[in-house]
Length: 348
Ligand SMILES: [Zn+2]
Ligand SMILES: [Zn+2]
Image (tube, rainbow, N blue to C red; front, side):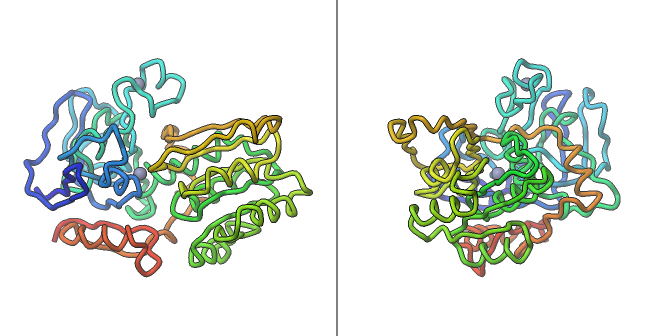
């Protein structure tokens, strides 16, 4: 089969690989019908993800059809359409029992990082019973595509932010994760959502989609951004800040625009260390919650897709068959033509 492999030194290539086989009774084999490229794939490609293994098939955001299941898989059968969680987890360890599946002692984020991922024709998925979500007949593959990663991340970020009804939520970054975060934050009924985004196209998009009440340009000096947020919030700062950008100054922005005792969720993935200037923060009494996503409870999110309360179709900018995935990477990495997400369709 064809698969996209990275060498750990900044190069990716389409290669011929053997079709994956079941290895454990809890495994399943999926024929990939739609996959996509995530910014984390770029981080891996650039060698910025220490736990990633080279010569692995990239990709962890996809949907497909179950081809084969191991004897221990009871909830899914060949022919089922499934959305696949970016985290494969046992469901039984100390962390899984508490919902912290990202730290599962037997799994977590493995697909496309430590084991072969989904930018291929077929993929082996561990712990299929925990990792799959059924796609209802009324939901298309593309509408379910983002469930297991960016939508899960938006859902998780909004949940751990403990958003109160009537509060003010600031979301830094209006890329794919920032947008899903705003969509999920809206469900908690805050009074105000403030979006901060440096890219004018993305800033306008969240305005046009009515995902934010205020949109502030992330290109403004930090002091101006802080001032704007204070003006919107009676001088206090945002009740909740979710940092989904991972830019050079967005971590500092996050704690500066937060009100005292705010929850600051960092779902962004950085390529460099960030500074936590505790003397400047002293007395602000902030609560930081940091990524990566614990992608669990996705049946609930799928139900919101099915009823139209969550719709991520606006994120899809372009489609490429697996044959042209190198071009898709180039366009996605450079945000060419304001690209948000690319969809990879099967090999032609
Ligand atoms: Zn991802
Ligand atoms: Zn576990």
